[in-house]
Amino acid sequence: MPFDFELTGKTVLVTGAFSGLGLHFSKTLAAQGCQVAMCGRRIALGTGHASALCEEGYTAQAFELDVTGTDSIARCLQEVNERFGPPAVLVNNAGVAHHSPVLAATDESWNQTLEVNLNGVWKMTRAYATMLKDSEVAGNVINIASILGLRVAQQVTAYAVCKAGVIQLTKALALELARYRIRVNALAPGYFETDLNRDFFETDAGAQLIKRIPMRRLGALSELDGPLLMLASSCSSFMTGSVVAVDGGHLVSSL
Image 1 (cartoon, rainbow, N blue to C red):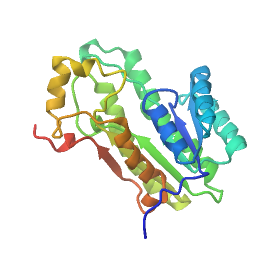
Image 2: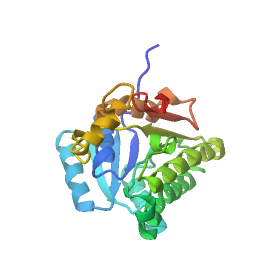
Image 3: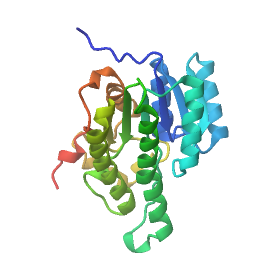
């Protein structure tokens, strides 16, 4: 029997959905027939992206969300529920990154990175699970981690610590939330080409990094689509607490 992503009509909430990976994920899910709740802080930007998807015949709406605020999270979930019904899938994608040597890092940048990238995932998932635990909806959480949570690099200390925390949080939540029929898995991307990093990877330093990837290239965002849709659909119905690395073999490269 062939596998089917079976996502048509499902409500999916994506955080950090107005740019980067979150915007790409939103477009991918909308193209699969999902009702996409695109959530983030820059609501004017998000409304434009959601409107563009609707003009293409897809179903999407932008909602204002700050993952660091419990009131904002509660309000967003209520608005999404009123518009689309309870989300079948939550994609915890919102994140920030500060690049600096340890001795040049500030308390402000450290605290902000942890508050958004780790605490935001915790707060969002807790609120989502609370909403679903007494309902008949089986939940599904996809946390966007990183291979930096499994293998570190220089000048991204706070980011790496957060992503390692997200991976352990994924496993702990999977263990506790299974009784409520809520699955929790993580997607850990390696290095993918984006508008933000394209110039860096054209430098000598960027070229050297690419050489350390066994497949000797950056990933294309479309190469995350299959793993994302697998985790979002019934194709992963017996998966929880798993971390799916998509990195061109970076994690298994020699030191």
